[in-house]
Length: 203
Image (cartoon, rainbow, N blue to C red; front, side, top):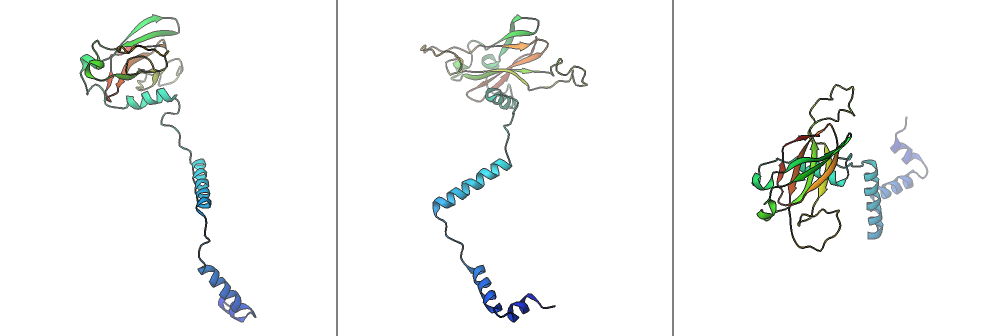
């Protein structure tokens, strides 16, 4: 059987075809203007993002709870003075399905150390028994689920609270309603990066 080279050489215009193909292979890449290259690069980036979407670290939470969950992974109760940073929680009121929990800080607290608490959260110590009824893990300890979280300004007022013109500062107080039957830990994060976890309470 004839080879590809033989076909090119034996055809009447074989030499011309071979020369044209060789010239095309050596031809320089077509010039693209900077705007055209930018469009192509952007399109490629968007296509890659669509193929490989990246989910948030804790997609089951909102932004604030996600932040609290990230802080909760840090080493706790090591930096700072426990007399200033150790939070404590107590039940203010309790109903048949939920309890109002208040988290406070010592006085004086972090403000006396030129620091302030920017986030307070309540962390569950176990699975919700109602949601896991009938399962084998209903009594398993599961640290780290964020039951509630609150963010605070340097003066101790809540970020989502009403604006105030007062220049006075005070240690923040966080209140939240949590489902009864759970055990929760109060945890705080300071602007200096300290994370402190207090004693748990059962609701």
